[in-house]
Length: 560
Image 1 (cartoon, rainbow, N blue to C red):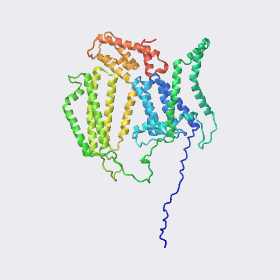
Image 2 (cartoon, rainbow, N blue to C red):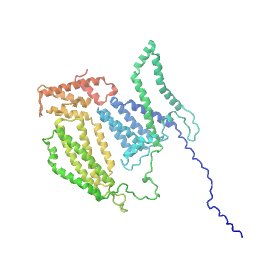
Image 3 (cartoon, rainbow, N blue to C red):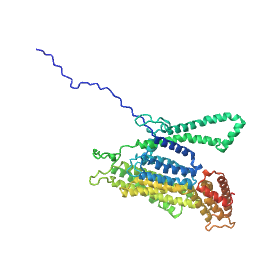
Image 4 (cartoon, rainbow, N blue to C red):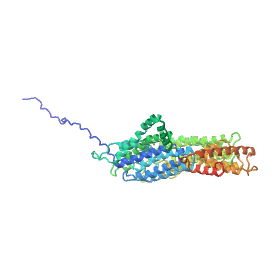
């Protein structure tokens, strides 16, 4: 009898499977349309640097902005790119062109530079939304995140390579060589001319030992370019291709949807429903209410105890222990601190407080707890009280000492905050209101307003009007120099109104003819300097403000 056990066959025999590496992804085949696009954007990059700094080329910068957004909208919606101008894209173009008007309507450097930077970022946002990469279902829903993604992410994703599109070997999508056409020759010729600039200059400098040759070259250069202009053009060409590469990358990456991410709202209809997550909404409502209640009580006690102090701002009376400047400045920084604290507390309460459970009878309803909404509304209302008081203080300060840029910007900021907190209160009443989009729209309206309105001219007109009425303090200090060429027209009105030696204001405030004579002398010197500066400016350095000022000075006899 054989007791040898029968071997049991292996139920899972090992089978060798050779590893097959994935096929390499074929290189992107640049089309002739990509070549033309790259060439256009290289020119756009050159123009970007040609009009920089903007204050030296306001008319050219305005023209560049119009071309950038109007031409960009046409380019993005062409069949070769396949974009579609959405409602957000149309708003972006309209707002950007409205902001660009500041380049011809004002001479305020701070505003113009802010507008130029904003519009540069807005152009990438336009590319992002037009090429179908936006995930927003409502305006402003992901504005900051998407703008950052459009500007700093998409341009660097393959196949976004301007250099390959201009000068690389072009193939058909199947990898076969494409017959060379004139576009490749044009690209190489342009690159060769750019590369020849520096060695040509070096050779020309080495041969300049010959007087005849040097005389001819000097005449040519004097007629065409100065040495500074040559190096400026070299800068524009060299840095322009880098800006063009960034723009080309954004368009091409957007065209191939490299920035598009999966949106839960775009999931297939038959996809399993995922449980709704409350995210960071983890704090009980009782805890948040207990935290905010003592703060609101402090606000109430503070308002009651300081009632006379705050109401004095509305009656035009200041406390005797404070100067006007201290009174207004203290009010502003009190406002700023409280507004920031209230904004942080309100935002924290909105983001961290637990929400009500989802109701199957009311899908899509606002799940914010009513107690949270009440607390946010009360905190916004307390901030509005402080804002109203601070604005009244600032107006009292301006009425005494006149307008300046800092006082104007501070008032603008306070009014902006006031409207934003009103929107916060309305959001607590109307649950379906899109607060992010509303706040974004409010900011854009205020930004366009302060950009298009000539702030410098308004400041000067107010100060001149107050000085003619007798408050000469509004024309003291650096108000003339700070307003630049925008103050010329108002300064001429002041000189004309006070030309009579027996001038007497209707409502004098510490008025004296000696002080008036001193201010007239300073104003006359300012107009003389402005006439000289405007006369030396080149045509491309002017805009509507400087042209009007130049004509007015000529009519007043300050220039021939």
